[in-house]
Length: 225
Image: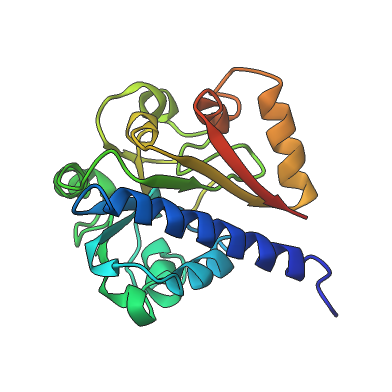
């Protein structure tokens, strides 16, 4: 069966890749290194592949994630695996990828080491590309997080989170750290996500729909059916 939404989603991915490439070029023209913060899931795969084809001095680009499941990088559930398979290819292979996981058994044990990695990166980020779930979560800031209030308010860059609706423990950048970027993008597809975003824009309680924490900053929305 043909996916009627495939073409606009590919076009959207290409447009976002071009915009990201241009942002990186602008920042690299005035500084030695630039940081790109990406999100996982299935939506960004064509964006990652299109971005990998952008002509850039990739050796001067640092890439990290907005959040990660506390799993091995070999796991199908790993966002790092997604980035390595679909973005760090060809010329983009030489970009410096900074993982959010360690060999520790739990994210609570690994959060200190990950914090040091994140703080060593060239902030403010050139761009943060966020995704959004049907429950309004972004990064690993879920409405049912036990640590949601902390994630929305702390000035710590990284925190471990436990979410009853999710099978794996996670680690996520805090809202404060995600705000520390020159550009913010929300990359979503499907009518259901558009409806969630519309609902988010009609209120201000970030604990109900955590994506609201980013609606107060300039947020470029990239959406396709």
